[in-house]
Image 1 (tube, rainbow over the protein chains, first blue to last red):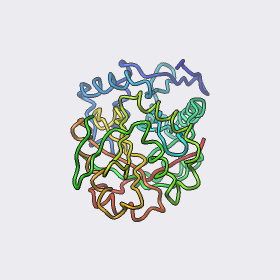
Image 2 (image 1 turned 90 degrees about the horizontal axis):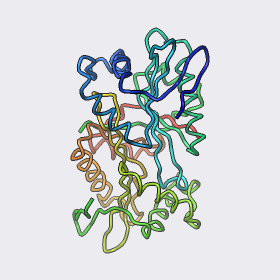
Image 3 (image 1 turned 120 degrees about the vertical axis):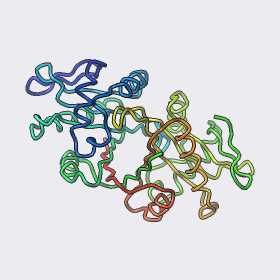
Length: 156
Length: 156
């Protein structure tokens, strides 16, 4: 994908390995992420980034303002049989830098994900949000998402 | 993956194109699937099956008893940065033939998915279930899944 100029001097472009410190810092600066991430040791993230980069169904993007990474999300296209062979889009790892929360950047990133998925002929876009993130739930509902499902997870 | 003999003369193996009529019949024989699927026109499913088969992160499997397809699910491995670069497994399209419901086959298929994901070093397995499928929710909880998330979807 080419870099996409968005509103207010913001650009959305594919993440590169040099973005990893900024991305991992955002993943860790979060009530849930704080206990799950290791921003002082990037080794596992570099490995994961290589896997992601080699998978044509994956797009890890960053939002950049004045050369600073201020947001990220991961978009996956999932072929499947159900719903008449519909390809669905899955959004994971949406994070906005603390300085930019409330700026509308989350909406810009999600609209990018919605537009990109539609142009790729996905018929559905989906995500799960931790049940404790009630502000995020209102945000997704404003973007036209419906809280139609229960999200189950199990650690392995 | 090789075919895996499971309990009671049951085998779990990768789906082939010749399994599509049986798989689509199961997708359609469902309160939600009835309005979404087109079992009389397999064309879109054949296209989707080709996409799935070419994606090394995807496994569409069937459970077979006495040469009859009696269950299916789709397992996807998703590389990602969050949770220290954890690869997660996603389960979609779990369907059990009407004749086999209550037989324990759903549990056998899901245990296959859990074991396969663990052996592939996934650190998490996740799925969403329509909020109306309350029996399914109890089933996933018995398998150790936690209803920790809200699942949001938006048609495109």
